[in-house]
Length: 514
Image (cartoon, rainbow, N blue to C red; front, side, top):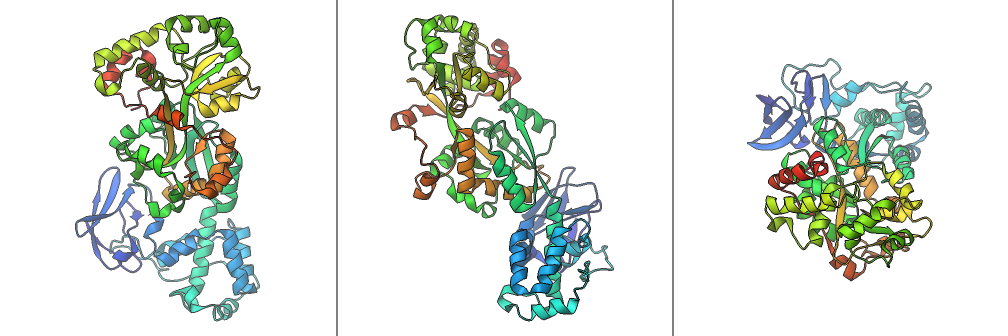
């Protein structure tokens, strides 16, 4: 269908309104709606896309607002109060009143939606008797004239195109956005034990956005949640999941202008991510680390009756594996990682093997009779620390967390180890993309990234070649050039390979998430 974008536009599809860029004011656009998506085109080019809603309301993408509206919308409460103090006591009291009691002093939401969003698609049937009228609950004892008198003392450059009553409208827009933020929520699904809780608390304090935080313990859990239609604003997939997520069009292509702190991310990490279906367009790297061998040398050497070698033969040689079964040796919790490392140990590559050869390797791994870990990360860490696991495939951060007694050795075996990159992504069905961008950018701030790294013992995505970032993590020992040389990203299993492996090794089949 066709619609016109007017100065105060609101177009309705099933009684729901969808935003377009403000530059399209007074232009004609084409709207295409499916059961899931509403797309808007101008001159045959796509300009806006929204998840289709079947309830009344407005779907607004913040970047569609004019720059001056974006400025107000993105202002933090502290900045608003500081601005009010500079302007005058009447405005300061007015701001304090509404910021302190947002639920009882809220500005009517129709004001924000009608009078100050000249960027929303409208059909010509829509009328609103309050169109253009700025109304709000005034602070008792504060007159409109007091605010107008203070307005006359404000620099015209600061106010942009706002004048007199429209300047008051800007004040009311601030209050509306403060009220909206007070009840705003960002839903995050992240790996377990993978953040400093204090950083989440600071985000809530600094933005007024509540974090609804959930955790998962395996990549399969994340895939199951997404396949079931659960909606999150931010997810943290691992690198080997990205090909499928992108192929299935489950992720939003990121607007990097809304993530200024992504410039702090290591170019080396971005280059590695690019190899995954150009995944750099869809994700912002969060943490990275290695998958190697952790051993309790005292326990393992006693059973092996010799020093523990820096080799995957500790787990993958049948004679060694048989000896270490009694002390809790495990292949870790990720089937793909175990099989990738086993194939590499055997000198094989997924890219060069047909399904039959890979299936044979899965037979050999299954014959070792070493279990996968199916419990929580916390229990895995506890068992490592207390000596109930003597050897395992695991992540460097997990090994470091468990090594409270100094009796564990983590290493990249001579045959090689995996490097993993976990990244922030925004699902296409995210209910609050604006909050998602703010959360991701907040987490990418160098100081916050360093805090999360210290809490989790993993390496942040920061460019650690920059001296300022090096200072934040001065105590961290970097990988040697030889260790870096031995690292590789896990290869992707083809559908045929996975089906063949699953007939032999059910854990990989049940965790199918590529």
